[in-house]
Amino acid sequence: MIPAPPDPQAPPPSLQQVVDAIEAMHPLEWAQPWDAVGLVAGDPTAPVRRIHFAVDPVEAVVEEAVAAGADLLVTHHPLLLRPVNSVAATTFKGRVLHRAIRAGLAIYVAHTNADAGAPGVSDALARVLDLDDLVPLDPLPGRPDLGIGRVGTLAAPERLADFADRVAGALPDTEQGVRVAGDLDAPVQRVAVCGGSGDSLFEQVRASGADVYVTADLRHHPASEARERAVFAEQGRPFLVDVAHWASEWPWLAGCADRLVAALAADGRTVDAHVSTTRTDPWTLRVPSRGE
Image 1 (spheres, one colour):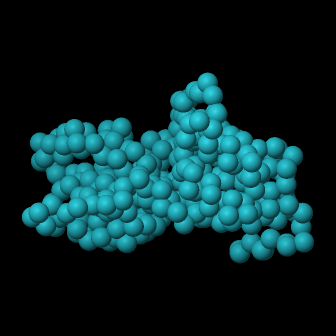
Image 2 (cartoon, helix red, strand yellow):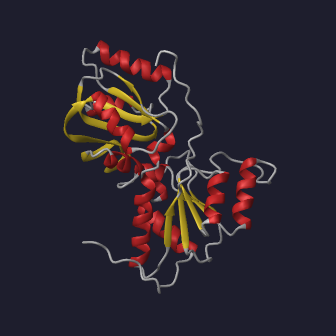
Image 3 (cartoon, helix red, strand yellow):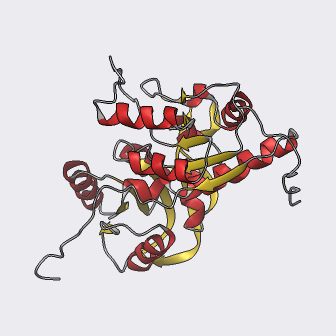
């Protein structure tokens, strides 16, 4: 059943009501102990008419949100992950925070609690790759339906090279593009994914029986050892597909925005939501090797 569109005459929610709706979808207790999630700045009693969604709370995104007339910026990555002694505008993060506060822009972070959700960050990545029968790669204790990463299947096997092309077409463009490790002609069908940095999950990937693992930020030694171990086992799997961190998490934004708008509408509140079009992947140029 298609939900009814928001009533334009309905009152806007307060910031606290929006926070409550986000945390109903992504409870804070799902976050990792080291994480910093929740409301970063904002008056809980202030009305929220427009919400801007982005991966990174960087200055360009804050300016984009202010220009769009947003009252709230929801980001995946934390602005203040590590403890600080000052938020003076003499630092780059302090300047971002001061700009947001002066503009009346609240900031909220849903990070590893959104990673663990169902639907969540890795769900969104898996679905843009057309994977079915999704299960968590690393389930939360006592909650086998939730957890970091997802494992699913393609409708039919396809060459690793063709699957890599599928990944490139499904995600936003970045200078890195898509890197692949493995036999390009080998068939793959069972796929593990983890939005963001996923090289801590190789044991879970092997246990899942995945033919290929899609994630971001793969470092030389973990990737090399994973491939050597696969070859030593005479299976060759899992193959690796490495994408840009920002690109792997960006698909979550639109789904989260839609679900939040629908949840608030069901409570008689109307809000407008937009997804950032600013590419916050830090790399700006890739120079091909001379042999390419």
